[in-house]
Length: 134
Image (cartoon, rainbow, N blue to C red; front, side, top):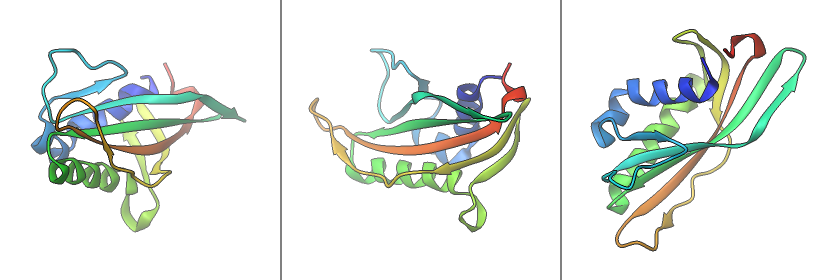
């Protein structure tokens, strides 16, 4: 499994996320026909590698039509990757072994120029064994 597929699977498997966006979670490309509210996420740069371990940063754009729903969605995503005791999450997602995933930057709120749409990007870092990537 690719790291982005693990992030996608985590987001789509989280009831609190799907309660707000349904199945509208997109990697890298948002179709023009996509409706709001949704999540669009992408990699920031290339993965870093060190002695069998890789880490990859992602930006998860929590996009909504109202300020309140956008912030609710961002909070759910932050909670998902925050983990218990603020240690981040770890374990297995499908065949992908997650060493750690955690929020790595504060969440700003960005009003988008097209109509009433807001974006609250959440930045996370995934750490995983290189051998896990297929």
